[in-house]
Image (cartoon, rainbow, N blue to C red):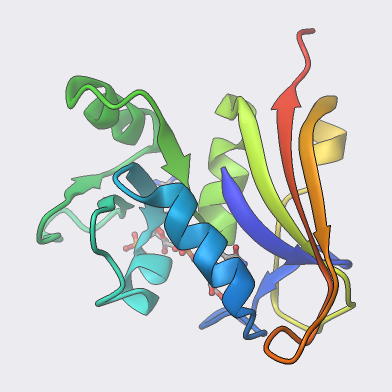
Length: 162
Ligand SMILES: NC(=O)c1ccc[n+]([C@@H]2O[C@H](COP(=O)([O-])OP(=O)(O)OC[C@H]3O[C@@H](n4cnc5c(N)ncnc54)[C@H](OP(=O)(O)O)[C@@H]3O)[C@@H](O)[C@H]2O)c1
């Protein structure tokens, strides 16, 4: 799963992301390049026009939903099956909140950006630390700068064996 969250675990307003951090946007685009992404229908619609090499698999309960250059799934498991059938080595769960919540028990790795600020917002990342123990594979902190108003820490966490 890939997500950017504030100190209070806020990831969004419900209709967008409550910060503009070009450095994180670059990280998100680079990490997902050429990969299958699992997205909730709301997040997919927010991201219209964003996709280049990424292949969206969109979760929805709407049976007639169509995704150009992508796929539709009605559950996390069927989304994962589509990615497997297509030979994808990795499926990047990319939000929003409801999809993170549903997919967390199946996630092997978390690619997280911690935005070092408390930021108001309606939607939060699930309490992943309550769900499992995670080992830190990498960590990189960047200070705020002229273009990025908050410091950020990029981490990759891997689920510890039970
Ligand atoms: N900071 C970040 O890293 C980040 C990343 C992504 C998104 N976000 C933010 O997250 C917010 C959106 O999150 P959200 O929870 O409101 O919406 P969402 O997860 O993007 O989309 C919700 C919709 O996805 C479908 N869905 C979700 N789980 C499903 C399941 N298990 N099976 C079938 N369909 C499923 C349903 O679509 P139907 O209604 O069509 O049935 C549901 O209404 C926005 O503010 C967005 O900007 C933040």
